[in-house]
Length: 175
Image (cartoon, rainbow, N blue to C red; front, side, top):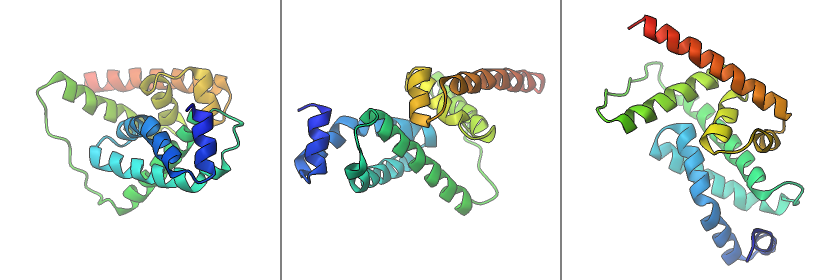
């Protein structure tokens, strides 16, 4: 059964179709949540909330956009909501992650530092960066998901590159 048939069946209350739809998209949901949050526990919470929201809102899907684009929008909004709730409950002191030896772990830490920086630069920077570089989507696909012009995505990513270069230079000078 293709996506359209699964979605239509799930919209009519077919639990098996909904389960198959979740099985098909869960890895993408979790992967994006993991990149967004930086830790497995939060990613699992976000993914679980996305699944609940999907169940609640699937009937509203009207096939005017690709299902994956519509789903990414839900994932992004859920991750933002989760992040906002977490920031409100977090203490003022945030522990620095311990130094690690492996290149892969250092790369993950660097990725999350970059994503945190991008999040502080304003609306849409982190999302654009994750969709294009994290998920491998084109600028046009990311623009559809974020409901902005393609040129806005290009501009955001250009700004990210400039800001990261400046940030990297500043960090080198401090070493």
